[in-house]
View 1 (tube, rainbow, N blue to C red):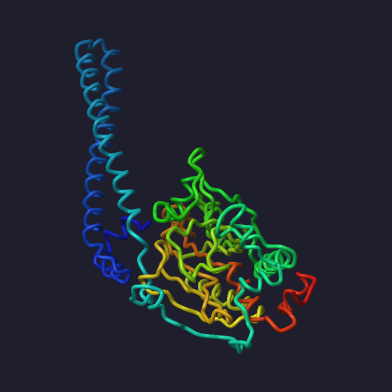
View 2: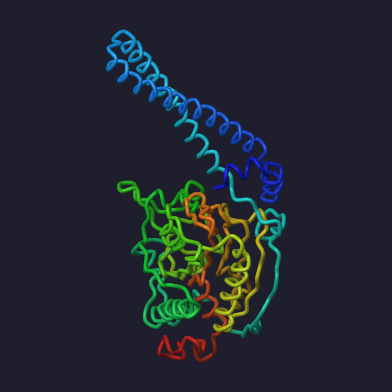
Length: 422
């Protein structure tokens, strides 16, 4: 959520930068400022009425003590009028505060100046490409056919038991999945991230704090009876550990990692892009989360990108690095770098990681602050990244490493799987 002071002090710049998201926010920004001014005016009136009421309350006791009965009764009458007036103004103040909050929720994060203009993922800018794209063999199969042939993923059983997008991993497929999770967690641990096993459901306040609500409400699985949400990513519970927290500056940076299943309704998804493991409603992911000093967050973003690139290099997967354009940028992100792996049998690039700097946008919702050397409270910056999302990694590993004799396992995973081939 944007800070109201930032909006008022940098109105023209914010309106201009939001155009990179293809958003004309001028009218909304003006309304936010107008509602904030109304709120401040009424809050000042409320505070004045409270102060006058408190002064009269003290005066009443003194008048009674001085035997000034008539004046005391007049003061009591005035005190009652002030209470009624303050109550009415308080209702206006609360209503304006709610309206202002809802208006602020509707404004996405301001894109970093380096975010390119564009309408969709087709306008994302390639930064680099790395690794050797394999030469596709004559009889190479896409991963969903390989999975059936080698009996390692059962998509049909998933449809029977739950529905499309909920596959069963079986035998060596299950072991390979678990191997990837453990490999990613061990790598994160060695890079200085603290491992957390969080809850897989969160309350509504947590969803609002990290920006999944109200923006992605239709994409989340919701238990209406308890008003709880299945998490779409470990980012939500991990970041919310620091909701309503004031840190000491020396506690920064905070580096967390966690493995969780992730749940996404993916309403409206269809076509070849959702075939097999390409898009699931439940999938496994290891996430990395950072809480940083504002002066360090973009340097840290580069470090996080390099870290995830290192994982893909160790898995011997060809990948490319993209800077997302304004039209493809997530609601809460100021800048996002995507990593995509090449899937040989499908002849396409598959997104496997998004690494984002949210600047102070999430922290303002979270009320996540730190005290500097002068004891001044400042909003921290939050960042997160997939390190990594498993389904498309697994798809690329199966397709790119197939041979006439089976599927070779990357050397780095063999200590985790206990086998070299499927």
